[in-house]
Length: 128
Image 1 (cartoon, rainbow, N blue to C red):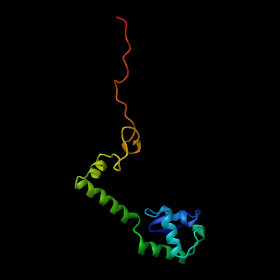
Image 2: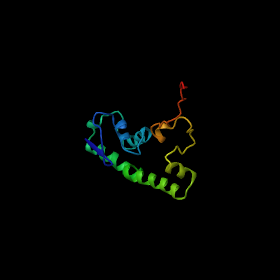
Image 3: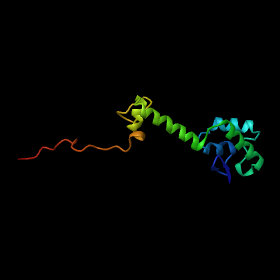
Image 4: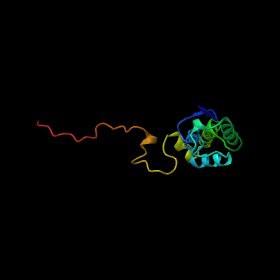
């Protein structure tokens, strides 16, 4: 089991896929890291040598912000938007989409499970 930036990456996946398990590294960034570290992108994680893992880790530490530090930066940015009461900050605090999506329909991921309001069914006529 290889650990990169505090994350245990899967052994049976190719290294370019396994690197994307680190928060802040996507497929493009993983390819860039492997190219500069001189590691074949299709090699499995379990087949890497300690020297190759060290080269990958060193390159990530020097050139990228990942994991906890990146999450701290992102949450700080959102907190700043909320503090200055910008429109985007208000949308974040109300847990609504902040990038212009419609909310009349859709937006279920952000708004949560649908809550049905009672009393909307038509009343059946009764005999008197």
